[in-house]
Length: 137
Image 1 (cartoon, rainbow, N blue to C red):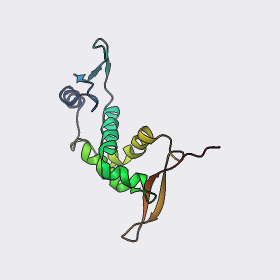
Image 2: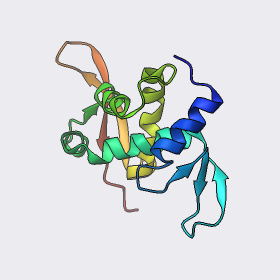
Image 3: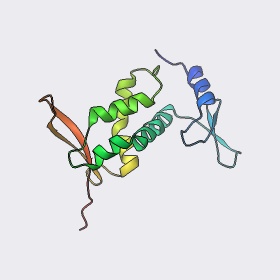
Image 4: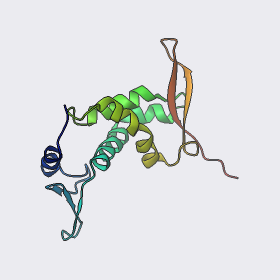
């Protein structure tokens, strides 16, 4: 189901711009002092939801910290569950939000976290994500 601009505007007015508590009103985000407002970018909102979903999922955090890592698909499913179901191609959006969410939480890819392939339990090669210890050179 495709959302129109007015439907997005209404959603932001009802749900708020960011999960952290800053309120969005009629498609704008109110500054902390309550004076100025800026337009809301839906991708920024969805990215904030993705970051919160990954950050707050204790099991997922444990997998990412483990040397075996977390399957990219598990991270995608965690993010997808946090996004509004009526967003166009929510599965693809969730998949595309994995790297930006991980970069916001942990830092640069290949410095603080890495994606690598290994064989999954089903025998297929699967992409996994794990934390890295940055080199101290």
